[in-house]
Length: 350
Image 1 (tube, rainbow, N blue to C red):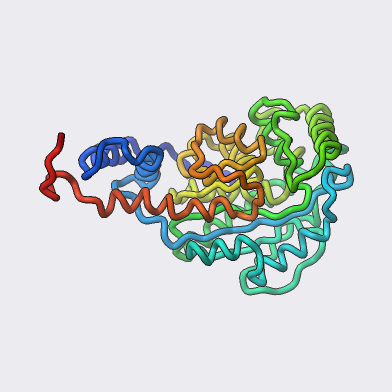
Image 2 (image 1 turned 90 degrees about the vertical axis):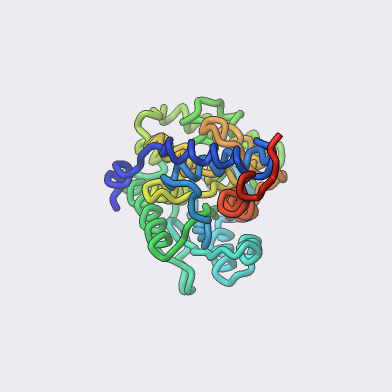
């Protein structure tokens, strides 16, 4: 699917299915509302699927999109760019935290090179879809051309389609890219209107001086590009990363196929804000896996109206928070499938 056909396929939630799910929740053998956020999640997933109960989100598939960033040259992180390629190799070999969490929850992993600077070679679960060997420096010029941003978006669309065609009933966002919290902060600021300081966090745990530098760089980029959120492709190209663009496409692809997508941390949240700017109805497919310690993530989730399922002080990325949230999503749906109603169970109501 192209970007245009994907956007045309994204529609609103099915209100009748949501009403049926709310009605069913009210008849199950438990006090109404006693499952809190999980009840509303099950209702949203019924609205996405168009029927009640919605399908179980199994099997689940994680896509880890990786890219490098020209803004690294601005001193926004102490980590060398080579770590991006090294960590991609670690993902492929199965040795990263996301691999451990994926095994724990029974999800598959696809690793996608959409913009890594160093060429990668081999691996059954590595997709080589490099659009450009890292972005340009967003503090100096546009990070991508609009054609490059579109190409990266369409990588995400194609990955979502391939995973869904392969049987995935739930998609999870993952990312890797040294310096990628700086473009994430710029995107969050551009699309939500928050200040550079309000969107920018410590990323990999930088010191006060480096954090101040990140805020300065994000502010400089916003002043330079004067982004217009009503033109999401141009704004994405000016400020984003190749993995941010691919994630936005991945999220849009899930929405177009009416499949839920669990949003991880600040990188995925910034991509989700971009996706929503392209297609506001795409938000119905989004599930906030956790609240990242990065401030921009909370800003983005509030902008989208999403309530995170977990709040563990995490800021690793890779898809780790999304993976840990997967059992909660499955549990929310399983309740609609398996819990008896008061009538069926012969239990007296109040």
